[in-house]
Image (cartoon, rainbow, N blue to C red; front, top):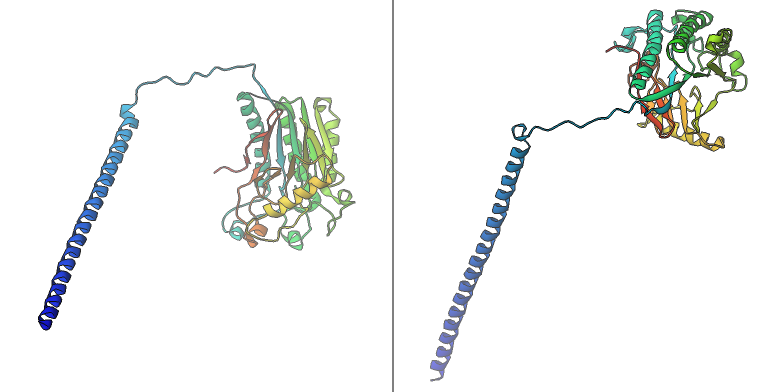
Length: 364
């Protein structure tokens, strides 16, 4: 009886275990089936949304197609001839390096420059400046004043030994050459530009000096360009027809003009060094303008500089391009080539510095 009881209990336990495991399997199968149904429902909902999305896209594409557009009238523009935006035009010319020759093979075929090309580009500057003045007047700008910045390096001079070998003219000859071109251009602007006032800030560059090293206090006394500026100014002063032209010739390195309440500083721009880096000259340029703002009590609203042969439009600085364009010096240091172009800017009486458009000196 005892053994029978034990066997009965064992058999009962086994039977119960089997029944329990079967129940578990049935339960798991049921859960898997339920999960599978839920996943299928989710997938169906997702696909239905995608179908709806694609349908909406297709309907939108049809709605904006050209065939579905209806005829409509253009906007009505009323011209107001009395509305004139009062502005001052500001243009700069610099870095002509008139007597320096650029041989095409030396600069990887990117530029050619000689006396004839120098003359063509300087004349083109004045012609296109006059064209841009006329076009902006047609657009509704009232332009009665012009600021024409002469920012230096009109000649290359002999500041490097190499230039003594390669220059096509001596410094005095080059000065006479560019002087004639500037007189011709200024006369054209004065007689054809219909300006009430022309201000010409004149800054000597670093190439036009007669000394090997730059001099800070007496630099103007040793500058071919300072002499040239005075010669040009004296010529125009002799004729009452040009009484609306005012030359401001720097004896230091800076000229400040208050235009509509904005302080404009004109300088050659060789006051900081470029020491390489991915930021180009703009990093040292920003540091320099911050220093200048701390020196000048009124602060500087816009600095106009040259020297770097790069056309840059920044928040408080306009860097002029060059007339000579890409040369051997730029090629040897791997500077990015840039077409010859000069600064042109409109200063609006109410809005400040608005339109900026380069004056290109070559045809493409």
